[in-house]
Each structure stands twice: as structure tokens, then as C-alpha cells.
Image (cartoon, rainbow, N blue to C red; front, side, top):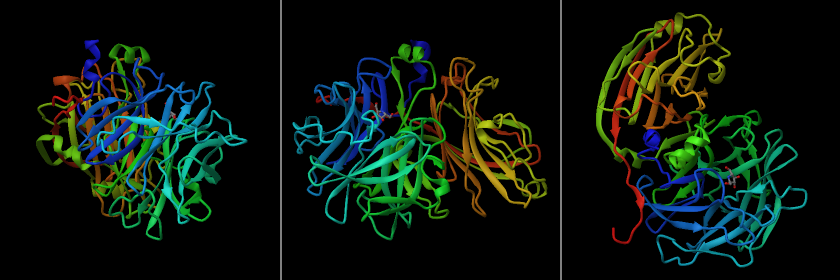
Length: 536
Ligand code: DQQ
């Protein structure tokens, strides 16, 4: 349907057609980044799930390869579900994935490359003795899935974790193995009551110096450990920072009040089933996440495709706050930057909207800074201490010190626009608390698409300006506040703000404070994402 073809993105990973969901088994091998994904090769809706496969030199430009793992055995005949790669000490690769069996229960299976000399890892072999793991007593075989990358223990064994739930407590089961064939249940890494099924658990170390990424097996006094779970009940990815004890195989949150599932979300928008891998080439940890559609299934079928992957993000500990991660688009995406334009110290008066003149606004990389008028910041009375993005009424709801920010994918008349903004609340003791939100309620005049308001608190330290990086690509908007402390991904479906009609605006809906903004904005090139052929 050509009416919807503008929604196709230009620099985000997506299959040629049909459905995609979770990222699977990402890894770097012999010069190539490998990306596998949950894929329905037959339709633009979830079902008949197998592993799609693509390779890249730079995480941005991709070659689509043939399906890597298909469902052709009793232990995965109802679906080759999510899994992870481990690179062994001898450099060989093992893949663990969940199979939905002939009885539609969840088991864990082992697969490995048929030929380790093939840098494209085209052929995969399933271990003949699969499954290597079935659900333990007391665990529902429908709640036992998504094995992680293995890490090495001080005992010289490999350890993995698998998401599950016990009653309504989300848990991560821990298994030890020496050969990826025989596994021993050693306990529970962590669990949080009331959080429901934990899908796609991720577990990895981050450096306390915040300098570079770490191999999944790294441990010691210089690291903190992250537990991430995908909360099936609320369809959001949540993480917490904590301490891992190799002896007991247990992990403890730094702050039990911001534990996994009840504290911080990795992304407050559309971002689910995410998974990291250690890029041994660049010494960084990279995060992939599934960005679903929020239009109708009927439209997805018309388009012939559904879902994107977010631009891969480097993950570091924020050493300035010690209480959150920093997520940032991989540096390679900057190679797509074309013409750049700078806007310096633009004054945005209270209650105003200002166009930013650009040659186009559907493929952008935006870096913006904002400063609230200092006098207003001081003189204003206590305001909006109970603010929350999702219940606030959105970007049109005016407060003393916000909202202000950008309107992306907007049309000239502003009938359509997606607001990406800050909102500052002031407590009675004079302290400020900053929120970062996106409002999709006016993102499209269509009425059959979801138009949520997303967002949360963002830490802002003394002396810091407010800053945001935004990647715009036709129907996706990824927004990173304060260097990636709080992140929001939106899917939007404008009908007017498309192609040459899309515009970008600054806005300030604060009642009491002028905002000064400086921006650098680049047009973005399209990525090369094609089928691999030997002729090329
Ligand atoms: N998607 C997979 C499951 C996983 C879920 C099935 C998360 O393995 O739990 O497609 O989106």
C-alpha cells in the first residue's frame, strides 16, 4: 500500500518484509557483526517464529542472509524462540535458544555453527541430543525461556540464567554447565515479587570507571552488575544496578527500592526484549532492542512488514550519578550524517513555537541544549512536585517551568507533531526535579494508532545544561536525555508530516521562564540494507 510506504525507515534495521521481534544472539566474529532476530517469514504478524540473520561491518549497514535456525524438530516445531550466543575460550560459538515443542512447552536447545571458518556463519547445526534443558520441578513449562549469554565462574564453569516466574514473582534461574549439554540448576540469581514473568533476562558487568565495555565474564571490585528483565505484564524493559556474588550465584540490587521491575526502565517508550553483547573488536557493550508498531495489525498487513530494531546503543555506567546506565547510539551512526546546520542561542519566549529552517525533517540527527532563564528558575514558587509525564496531560499542559523542547515530524499547521520535551518541577525547599517526556497525542490525525505520553525523571547535576539527542527516521523517534540517562523511543504515524512536508519546531510552553536553545542538526543518509549476493 503506497499510502503507508513512507513509514518504512531508512537507517534502522528491519527485514525486507514480514514480522520481526526480539533481537537474538548478537555477536562479533571474524570482522562481522552478526544479528539474529525473531522472524515470521510468512506474514507481518507474530507466528511461525524462526531466526532471521543479517551481517554488518559497522552495525548500521546490513546484508540480509538466509534464515539461520528454522523450526524443523519436535523440540522447536512450534517456534525457534529467543536465545543468546556465547563465545567459548577457544573462540568457538555456541547458541542457546528456547524451543516451543510439539506440545507447545518451552525447552532450551543448543546450536552451533557448522563451519567456524565461515565468517558469515551461514549454516547452523542443532545438537542431536536437544533439548539440553527442560523446566525444573515447580516451574510451569510455559514460563521457562530466553537463555542468556553464559559467563565464566571462578570455579571454571559456565553459568547462564533463564527467565521465569514463581506465582507472581519474576525470577531468573541460574544453571552451571561445562559443556552446554549437561546443566545443573544452582538456584535463583534474583527475584522480585509482583513483577510477573521475566522475559529476555540480560545480565552483564559494567565498569565502575565508566570507560569501556566489559566481557560478560568480567568480575571483581571494579565492576557493578546489571540485571535487566523484560516485563511481560507491562511490556517494558527494566534494569537495576547491583552486586553479583560469584560464590552463591546471587545478585543484590544497590537500592532495593529501585529493584528490577519496580525502578528504572531502560527506555520509557516502545522498546522491548532487549539484549546486549560484548563487542570484543571495539571493547564496548552494545544494546539491541525490539521496537514494535503502535498502529493497527490491519495496517501492518497492508504494509507487509512490522517492527524495527532500535539503533544499537553503547552501554556504560554513569559514573557521575552511579545510579543509572548511559545509553548512546553507536558512534557508527554518525557516519550517516550529511549536511549539518547550527542554531545558536535561540530565545524561545514563553508560550511560543518557532520553526527551524531545514531542507527536510524525516531523517535527522539532532543534538540540542536548553537553558531555562535563571531568574525565573529562582523566583518561581513551588510547582508541580507530583508531576509525571504519562498523567500530565502532555506538551500542551502549561506549567511554570515547562514543558519546552522540540516538535518533530510536524506539519506546517501543527495539526500533527510529536513533542520531545523537558519539564522542570520545583519543590518547596527550592530544589528542582527534571522530567523528560515524549507526547504522541498529536502525532497523527489518524485515530486508529496508539498515542501515548511517555517519560520519567531524568537526573540533572549541578551546572549541567539540559540536553537531548534525537534520531528521527520516518516513523521512529529515539530520544536520549542528559547523555543517555533517560531514553524514550516512539513510533509515530503522521499522515501530513511526511516526506517534504515534515518540519521541525522549537517550543516553550512554560508560563514563567524563557528558554535559550542551541542546536546542531544533521540530515541523515539512508543505510545500505540489502540481501547478500555473491555477485556484489
Ligand atoms: N518473544 C519470544 C520469547 C520471548 C518473547 C517469542 C519476548 O522467547 O519471551 O517470540 O518478546
